[in-house]
Image (cartoon, rainbow, N blue to C red):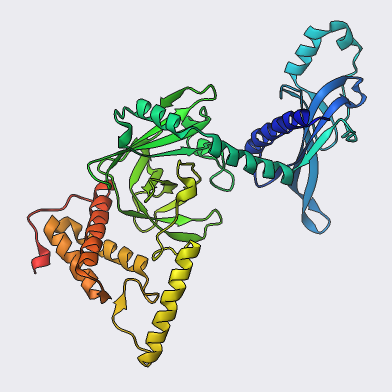
Length: 443
């Protein structure tokens, strides 16, 4: 088998792997391997076919045994032709069942040959792989899938994508496009659901593109959701709508697929699902105009709001890193954190184990936790404070934390938290409008 033929076969195997995997129950089924046969006989049916692909599916089912409930593992097969049309299925008892579409094609192609076949009650077993055949394991398919995604990112023409996104979203000046994020709606975001399964309106699209148009300042943005069909055409989808008055500052608790908490994230955009006000997408646009997208549940419940991260693709994937002092996720950041920890350890020893005041850079202060506490306290007072009173209230809360800040640092922190509070209150309709006449803060 020459290299070109091998690559063509691998491409079709990978397409089948992606297609079939999406249709399986992730908890009880998985693609174990895929085999290609240059020539193959369909069991005892006397039917011989060329260039077939067989997807081997590993199934697990519970059954009652002698010692109680047991887990049964068995294989089933899906048999496709060279155009990836499904020809037949094979159940756990090796019973072969042809699709009506395939039988019709056989009848139309060669009626006399069709009459000679014995297709009823035929059984099937996997043939032996020979020199001109090919097989790929699940691990090999997963590796090829990762490689394909990596190559796709490198080959994508971002200038063209961004220009088309601007045209669809009605952004007249491409310089006003702050970010463009691309999502595969058919990739699982939970243990057993894709975004297209959660939001069925997205099922007809090959990918989803979310554009963010710059507002009057970096905290503003108008988000547009564009669906791209398999034929390449694009359209604005009505599966989401932007929450009114949203730009930046809300906190949602991000969780892993196993339910463990990851961190609080600052959200700069909120898209809700029409008719489902408790669910939607939260979008954060970072330092390099990179979008961080999550699916949000319990949206209007500030205490129990949760989100599931959604993998997205952006122009600057290779250049994004987190802020050193808040995240410390890069090598450079970790080194700087280590040096800071060593410096403060020496200071603690020098002062008999005591160190005051706390510093915004220090390792002995949880800045994220303090920010969250200040925002929550200010939200409880929000309805009763004017804009300037809110600013002063937040400043007093910061001062009460005994954090050592320069005047510029404090001003930035006050502004950041004030925007968070104002956006939180505007974004979620469960909060009432504040009364401009009451002023308990002066008391």
